[in-house]
Image 1: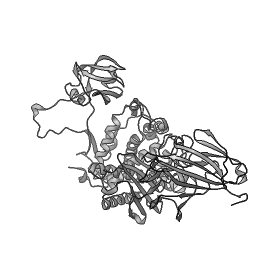
Image 2: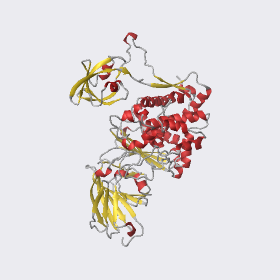
Image 3: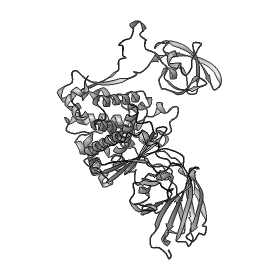
Image 4: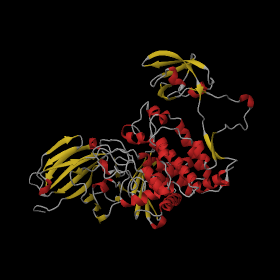
Length: 600
């Protein structure tokens, strides 16, 4: 190539560098018109969309060099923690290359090994300044007999070469290179690949295909369509859960290879799969205005993450119910668990849902000892507020409108048009979709701190929320245990002793003066171990006191604690005997089940 090009072009190439050493090499070939100027900046993103935390991917970048088309080196200067400036001089064709280290099997990381190469774009590819919106090419040189999986249009197969609309699409496309186990399904006539990366021998293929297909169908039924012609579920099988990350035409989920048994583990597989697939609409298309196009160099703030993640959490369980993968009773049991968890977090009375969304960059992904007392998850509260809003809309409209109508409205007016939702627009959009003014609801539960009255909202569907009674069948009344004492701490095991990690605001521990870091050794002179803490608390009743001995920063001390009453171990949601026909009908339409299915 020669001469002065009229327009820029960019090609990314990925080469294995040292797979046992967890390294690849990325080369960015730039064809630069004179209008671009001689100094070209390359910037590594500091975060990846969907995981709202600054991760500093540039720390994995080394061995940087820039050369002209004929191999002459060009000056490279590091300008900031994640940017490098190449002085291209008169060169119109040059390349910028670097090695990337990746040994993190996570949905937002890079995992480079002799078994496979998994690339999350934000951790692998630098942005060429000023060229974010031009078309790109990506070429990958896999080891022999390895295949490349990516939801991008393919230009050639040997070597695998793809086209991306722009840098945003490149970063929004996870890539796996290896020999995974692939299952293909076509629900609603749309091809979905289930790509299992790792030891996939235990995958119950037919069952997984059927159940994932039902999730897809339930989602399509809600919105009336699917917004793409091909989709990939990347399932990375390892030792532990790391959740999932949504993309426009795929998702990447990291989970244990044992996830398919027992049933409770498999249900979590269904949960995460459904959550990430719902993001196909909510987040990737229905999105806050500020979340796209992205600024990858800094935090992108919004008060609406509760809609993006919390509402998605709400629909996760609801769609599993509609898909027939959760029974009505199972669904209500999961809701009750969420309510229990929510009510045991003091931070719900301190931080609003909007504040929780906005502060995610310094909060949700960076918990510390006081987190529980000062903040609330926009996933957890957002899901429960969405539930209450759905029931409120169904109640007000006699069942003719619901949150389903709101989501379809947001799709038709924002998601399908590629338009983001304004920070303060949502109450008006709910009204446009349903005819109902929800300003007071939002002021109370979204921007405000009013406690959620679950009993009232569930009552609209003829349901009651109560503490579960302990099973008494087969137990000797004379051996009946009383209510155990409650301390109000979370602890970790240190030298066989419980060391306090968190003290719940307003708890007996907090009122007495116990604090994170205290290492408890005895109650009333009797040794207490980490493994025996629960049994030790059973020796006391609420209202009784004990002299608690503990080490604080290496010094033995003690204080008196007056124990309290523990919150209920479990909540249950059940049909009310006095439920009206209107309430029964509301529940039936909401849960896609007959009233009898909720009883017994």
